[in-house]
Length: 219
Ligand code: SAM
Image 1: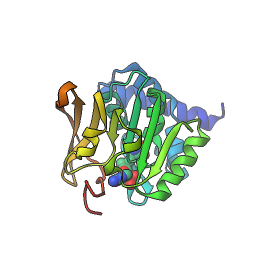
Image 2: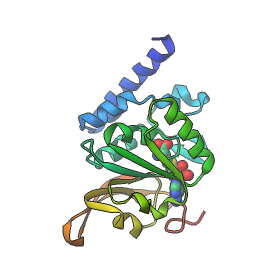
Image 3: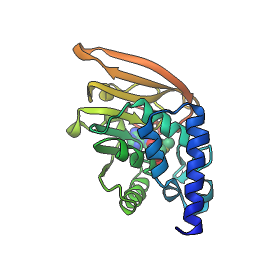
C-alpha cells in the first residue's frame, strides 16, 4: 500500500472510532461499510486531505457531501440487514449510495443536478459500486417504477414529508428524512405499519441543503 493510501486508511479508521463509535453508532454492518468506502475518492482532489474530517465538504453546484457521522446515523436508522431494496434521494457525490450498496441488496438513487449525477456515476463505477442505479430527475416524486422500497433515505432537507415517499414504502419499510425549515431540520424516521398506519420518530437535529422540487422547496 502506498504511503498516501495508508494515510487515508488510518484517517478513515480514526474517523470511525472517534466520530462514529464515539458518538453512539453501534450497528456493526454500518461500521464495517464506513471503514470500507474510500470517502476521499468522492470529493475533489483539493479536499481529499479533509475527507475524513468531522464536517460536510463542498462538491460543486452549491451542494455538499454530508458529515461522516450523519451518513452513518442515517444508514443505521434504516435498520438494513442486507436483502433490502433501498432508494436514496440526493445522490450528490455518490458517497452515501456507496455505503448503502454495502448494506442493502439493491440501491436506487435520484439526483436533480445532472453534472453531480454524472460525476457520482463515474466515481461509483471506478470504485466497485456499479450496482447503484442513478436517475436524474426531481426526486420528490420518488421512483414509482421501482417501488415499493424497504428503505428510503432523503439526503436533503424537506419542508414536510412528501406523500409519495409514504406511498412508495413497503410494509415494515423505513423512511429517513430531515424535516424542518431551510436552515435546520429534525431527522425523522417513519415506519410503515400494516393496515395503512405509520409510526414517526424524531432522531436528531441536523442541517441539510434544501430538497428542491415540486414537493419540496422552490429552487
Ligand atoms: N447523499 C449525498 C452524498 O453522499 O454526497 C449528499 C447529498 S447533498 C447533502 C443533497 C443532494 O440532494 C444534492 O446533490 C442536491 O442536488 C440533491 N437534491 C436536492 N433536491 C433534490 C430533488 N428534488 N431530487 C433529487 N435530488 C435533490
